[in-house]
Image (cartoon, rainbow, N blue to C red; front, side):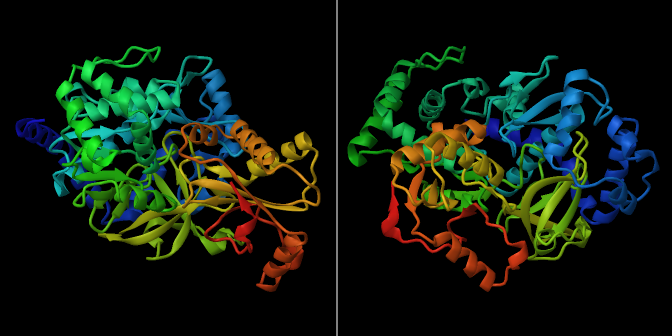
Length: 545
């Protein structure tokens, strides 16, 4: 990629996005007023929908009134409205038609299809371009090619033909032809059904191109996994690069030019070090844009060792299927500004929410270095939506607090995007007990971020085969959670491990927690936790793989 093309790209992006960026920064000077305007616009636009009529949107004239009229919703409470609009096309949640559904895992076994209107698509595209503008103003990471990994734009269709897929794939596909020339991986690649084959194809396109200056994806574990695939399939990958060919993927993909010189260069590198790392593959990569907070920090630490020493890892920002939540406007301090012109935000401190105290505050009322549950209202029909995420206030841009993702909320674990819920684990254990005819006294499933796998800790009075038990439970969870299944098949999540608890472990754990301050009459086990935060005592000699 020549410097002329880079400067042209930078100039076009700057001309288009600078006015919007300035407007965003001006909005940050008065978040209270801007947020009230956003809420008023969303409520007014959707006042005649079924949801709006039920909750008397036409009478909502203040934030306080909105909170009084509309209760907090999770996806399962909104699902009947979403499915009714999906099946009938009626104005149930939004007056504007839904043009896309972002599919992600749900708290039950049924996937969540998050509705997106054309306004929502336009907002996501705008925010993505603003994010790119913020990066190009602060760095030179776009001087070369961009190796970016997204999802499939279309995985399925509703009965009336509305596409279902991923938000990242949708935006990737809708880029202009000029912008696409800067990207290494064609968007069609993400439509390859077989996970392992998809990684191989991405590797062929990626290794074919030497002048990569930017790597980007949501979860850094994707890049760690990709490198494993590269080294496990290196002979086939280099053969395809040499010949300019691709494996049979059952779909049409853009062709490659034969590049025997690049294949030979990579073979020489392998002969010296046996395995490739990104420092060898793309020695001039300047920046990696990924999630770096929460459980991703462990994958980031692994990825850091594989990169050139001068490569900067940059926070992507708070981003989910439901919302593009923030833009990183200061990459050195990782100050991520909420999308306050498009999304209405509410927050409750972690202590209040987990003690059933719904003391909501607005964006302008947040306190620095405080942890909050976040709730969103969007133009695509999510109203006071509990996304079950915990964020922390990291600083301030003008008068608007900046936030970072910390973790999923109580009852959800997330190592590499699987978003496993406690309800899924409980249902899975019920199925496991039925299938294997076991009756455990106590169990807990621990998310081990360092090992990128789950550890099943179980107290049983009968003899059993640990391998059969963990394999069966793992398969059941894959049936209950499509994201868990995807991460297991792509090996971003390792095999489940087993830890046998001694007799009386569950009771001892309960006694310990009550003595530490939990109320006996309200005590509940948490059957899904993180290994790094659990107070359950484990004997390492009782853990098997």
